[in-house]
Length: 219
Image (cartoon, rainbow, N blue to C red; front, side, top):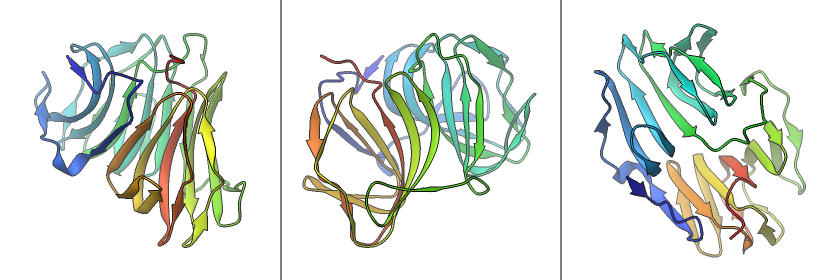
């Protein structure tokens, strides 16, 4: 399957408009945002576990990033509530599930093969740092090579400087309204901007976004 797999194109997706698609395992469904491949694929999805669902043990050849949106996500390493970021590095494996049910933002097969660090951060108990302009707060989640993943809070009325994205940029709006000269993006909107794209973002009402940069092809 190829879905939004041309990384030279800017893409905006409102996940509320996407159908839930059953996985091969009962009780686990996905909303497909981008995908290049079959069941093993480079992919970005919203994944929903019904209460009591368990995924089979599997390996992440090129890694996995998870942000827990609601409920409690679990595997043999622990239980992870809303706002928890998990990076499972290339070559790692686990058997995930959820006793209560949960919803996740998941990225598969986007990591550098040599990035071997597992990361778990509870954003509700982590230290946020001042951003590059007044009104921004940043929680770094993962950095390796050109790739950076972070949560960013925008206070109402915050405006950022015009900038260009080397290696592209991907944003998932978690709450509030994120904006730039191309439009306004409410919670649940996913935006992918290609290598060397540019914009000047702002937020009139405030927002929180998940941001990943430097992970897209350079051509």
